[in-house]
Length: 348
Ligand code: FDP
Image (cartoon, rainbow, N blue to C red):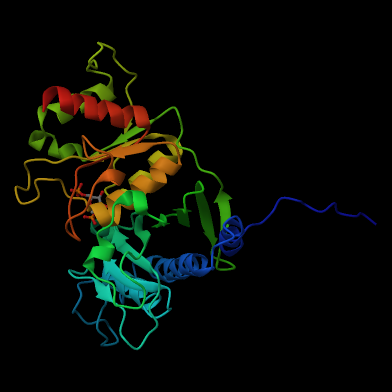
């Protein structure tokens, strides 16, 4: 009889992985582990809906009625609801805030008050929803600053990125992935739809040292400053840096879902940027939000060996003053982000 030798390759579910990370923190109570698991669960529910995206009951404007006569809920509203519903009454959180909602989401008094703060962008890249293009969910977890027991406040949500406890994103693409860091490296899990589990497929992600891509909405070039224009030419290999050196040109990739652009550049190496521009005078600081997009992805990038900036300052060092504060954003390989800062210093 042929005896099969056991395959010692470990299959690591996200739950086991988080628990193993927790073991290296003897003081940990397991609450963060459970919170990350709740987010993974919300991600599974959202993924199950995004894959049905072409179906009538999901697509369409909110407020319209489907063939069964039921109200249609748009996918971004549904994702927002899933993130809040699966998290607000677990006793792990003191407050939530969503990119989709103007104010903070307090924990109702009938539920236990936790010690963490969850900020999230439920469906990033929403302009791509109707076109079967990758979209995602981004999350950021802080410890509450205010005293235990009392209701948490806006101040608990306005924390500097350096104080992040964990952050990550889910990407709903050809497959669904969850990528997160709790300050011990960046780890990526792929959802096995057959068993409904996230399995570790990308342990210890490090941003590739040989960047391949730059990602920016080049359609807005006419609204850019001179520094940004020249920096982009530099990335294309057509403009020298301050020292007179040209670089090998990079390829352009822009999906228009930040999570997807970010994810590709994290694995392949590159830079994503959304600078301030003169297109929308009401958004002089660019379009993206510091709390929901900038800080959480900056933490991931730094843990993977890259860096981020608003053009002058690391995104993790910016003090937020408003929940929905916007920021210019440059994120990816360290040398490319530093070069962006150099061009901005030189020309803007
Ligand atoms: P969207 O408006 O589709 O939700 O966060 C907003 C965001 O997408 C990012 O995901 C994306 O990178 C960017 O805006 C796209 O904006 P432009 O269409 O202006 O390029």
